[in-house]
Length: 133
Figure (tube, helix red, strand yellow):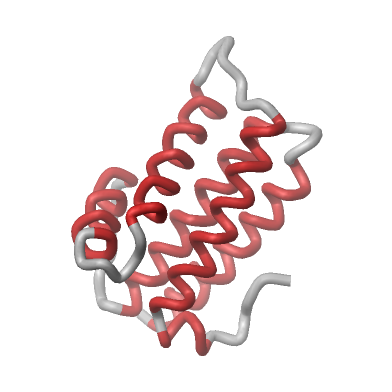
């Protein structure tokens, strides 16, 4: 699982970098990439604990149950995940509703803070050589 976690951790930071690159030209896609940065970061965290999930709602439940409700991560991290999940759904499926550039930038900022928080909560992630640029 450690190798899988490392791949997911790298994917998290690459997704965040993609979000930054897309924020001006395609805020919808930037919001989606910001969400996936957090999703892959959580997947890496839980993989180090021998856990895996096949649904986005399952990883959301695990975040709240195992990390937020136990004070490993702040309630703000739980709110960030929920915000990013909702924003991704708007960006991917919103029809006439679009993600604004301001919201995309906010999503990127929140995703970066979230990844820093789970890195601080996990010795395994903190020890991985791949980090943000």
